[in-house]
Length: 507
Image (cartoon, rainbow, N blue to C red; front, side, top):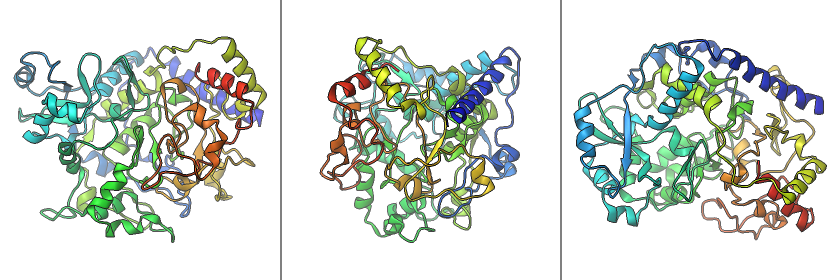
């Protein structure tokens, strides 16, 4: 096993080194939605043993490109004088110059700009009710939004569209993967710390723009029907989502309201088996993407591909099962290959851990010895503190086929985590990815569902009991439940646990 771990980590370093050796060369963005790369990119789903479908290359590139620059939205007390009028006078501007050859460093800087400026084009709005809410100090006091020390509301952007109209948009990738620290600074790539529900009523209008009728001029799908299209798993005989279409809108809203800050029931996921928003810092050391390893991570192009998938190009279909009509799944906009590739290069090479405020000390050095003695490095191998492998969820036996043999799987070991996400959702590959432990100090949710909100709770054996109150995500209508799995370290003496936790916070 040690030889396998060394080989896997060496391969990851070699991959990064190979890309680094080309850092001085000027290159143009590759074709991101490439049919050959897409064929083997996704991993098969458990229970059906098929890969998800993807839009064809021709279908994807037939969609028009959105390449508009966006601008920060400020708290009304911090907005520069005449700010919105100055944006209107500037008119629409491109986010990036397309087709330009760049060095790797230039791609990183271009990606940093995309990271900051990319917004969700389909929900841009000029609705005065939403704009008035965001520009009202009284409304923001009642329903606060995340704000930086210079007054930016980081989940929103202003965009001047090609017709000259100024609209308000939602920040895209950086919204879910940026953390506002207590001093108002921002850690790009970290786990988000959104304000918990209830959401401002006006924001529900904005989120409602995601909904599309089944046909032109048709009625919008009922909330329960839309929820089933997002989460339903019809090949499972015991699919908990079968009841969603019959739920009243209020009950569907209660599912969303059960989310905890830093968790998100994503499309293809589930409100019943939610996901913790992961940190993207150091993602180059992960062989797979998503908690369940839904897709391979072979380099910046796959990061770019994944950004395209989750932003505009995922209809959730797999095998004979489709969840959207032809009209609903139509690609109306796409991002440029330049923007996607820049974003991938920035996340892969340019995103760095912030300075850690927890320097090593006597207690943490003692914890490092405990980490080594307990065998933690077997899965959480330094210096990335992950071996990049997949571990089967309880109740899943990897099939003996060629698709499975190409995966890096830890065999003969189970960790007992709740298998719901891995087996009962459309993200269910049957596996969980071994996460990196780096940056734990600026993340407060642990376990794939974000059920635990502190390392102290994670190493407390009380979490295995049914009367335990999870300190993170609990689940719809749930107040008490066990958080099973990963029992390593639960039986350590209290002083050893304290030392181990001190060490983990230095990573």
